[in-house]
Image (cartoon, rainbow, N blue to C red):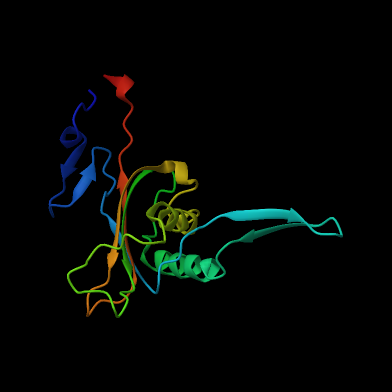
Length: 169
């Protein structure tokens, strides 16, 4: 018997936590990373005069930002995490608010691009929550200016999702 609707694939345990029919926990993992979000940007490859290939990133702060994400992600990762499952990813980027910006403006419609911010997160989480970012089947993301009492950073939610073989009906 297969599951045709999402609610058919998930049950509740005695504590009310979501579980797959196979008994695996489906609890989301929340990761909070402080600091100004840095976009993935473009990579450039070139050959030096000596013939050695060099690959560079357009943003010099990218390495530190990805390392910060990876460090916080490893702290929050459950010990029995399944690296081969499908993932839903939620990311809320809190951008530093310019001092001269009117308070009524909440959304950040300036650079960096949201898709490049997401790429940096995906690269940082690869090898920690999934083997390949192709396992991320859905992304919910947004960027906004941090409120007065919020720090810039990213709030990342990693949600494991059951993969069901629909041919078993």
